[in-house]
Image (cartoon, rainbow, N blue to C red; front, side, top):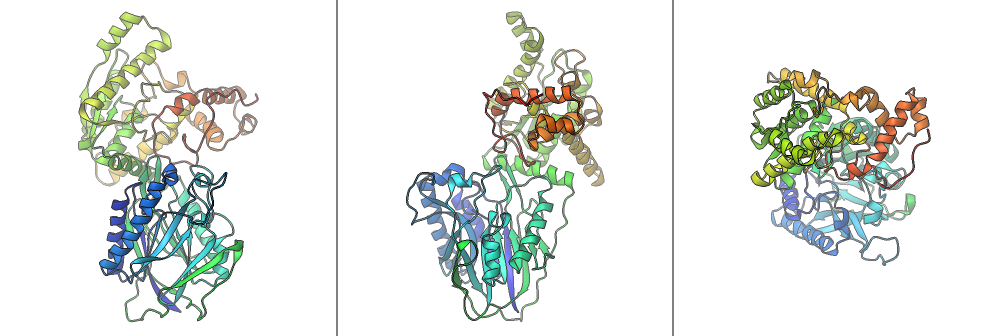
Length: 584
């Protein structure tokens, strides 16, 4: 057996910030060396950020990534870190690929490199390219065709990138065929609710298939509508957890692994899926046993509601900070949606950077205004009240609107007010719509849909109530003031655009509605299969009709944090002009 001290650097990268990402890799590599690591590992495309999308097709960006990688290797050596192998993901290109129809321009590669001695001693590309959900990697990359193996301190370490573990075949069985003592996979797999359990079972299964200890390093942070939750995992060859990183935090997970010593002869040839073994020996001799053993640690994991809430906070914070904004603006109605958005915003960027505006109309209830004021008092956010009645009266006098047009005018006046304040004071507006409303078109274009980001756009209404209760309970457990007024949670939801209005005037009860929507939107179930689940036929037909006819509205809604397997955005792409309807 040989001992290998592994440093898994679970870091947050920003797309396009090559210099900043390189600086982060350098800083964490330095920390890894200080911990006595024999191998420092960084996530998939850590140098460029992930996902780069169409930047992969821009040759100037590929060139910049390659140059930054070379510069990083040199800087590591200049700082005395040249003898520490550093595995880092970046964007490369396939030099041998010929242009052809169906291949992405320039043959980009989702690649990783081992930096050692001031240069990249081994490079490789992701073998399995995902093409589902938010992933379009067939559009952007060409696949790798090698099994990269490095010999470090007398241990053969096989290397893989993300989807190489999620798909059957390829580098996992190839690692077994090559006799690897350790399989390391670098990843930028986005967060989804309850995905941590799926991920753990996947890593356990792949370790058993590879026949060796397996380390799964994940990215953390946020990028546009995606969140990366960390949760890096190391399991032994039997699937037992040796170490596990925290969720939603940057960290360096360091541990000593006792692994099979590599044979004298390096593996070579072609193995499973026609992968050619690309082997490089960096240090053939085992590490001296004098150093104390660093055991693996297993971080305490969040419960389901805490996990979702933290994902929403992380997503909003990343969007604000990485886009150079300083503060956010929210229209506060006293309702549950805007209250939860305000709580998330205060946790994400601090209450001093959150601005709330109550914009009462003639139909706003006294308790709604009071609830908005109470929310501001509890959270400490900046608050003001600007009535829209004078503007509303002016429009009504000029246009004489009635019915739905009159109701929507109030929402659009509020949207105009928020955007005017945003322009004047430099805040970005947060849209408070939830997934139930967006699914059914229960939002006013250019009204409550205005904004730069929608923090809860992928959370169904029943989830909104659950998260609000969790956030208040969490505050009480910590001896803090619950941020959300109890009345905002217990009163019937209402847009308050006409006297006595409640959401159930237009929508089914949310517990029923959300179950139908989950089947139709998230699971792509058709009318017949949803009815077979026990739902009323007329109700199902009405809900599906509302969802289908609201596609044009959803296309105009701002991005927002994705927490489900299928959010409104890249996950679910339907034509706006579409005469197909589920048969009833």
